Length: 152
Image (tube, rainbow, N blue to C red):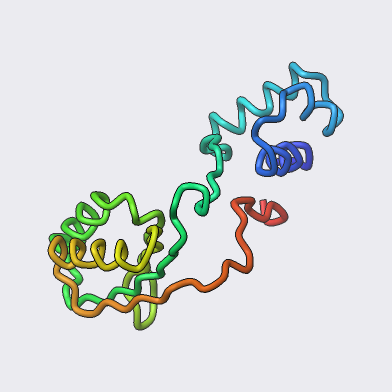
């Protein structure tokens, strides 16, 4: 990615509704070469998709929980069961395998603590877990979907 591609990606990360003409004007290209660059960024996988960001508070998702999971089973069968299990829960909006004391981290979004408890009960029925700890987010202090591009 050259500087122009990085700028195109930066602009799209900030506002994916910008037209090719608007992006081109900001990066110094006419619409056709700008469109070609965007298409190349999409085809190469740099631009993986374009989405609308939803404000959680506007769709009744006031509670964010970080679920820290440890397991005694580190085999493919357990992992497949875990992946299938968490895939069934739309409340799980992010999932990570981690290093250190915690094996997996889930970001879960629900309307309230009662909804989290119902989610938790379904989760432990679905997947055999050794230890589950939950931390509730009190305040979101920084949130961005824009990736830092200076490493590209």
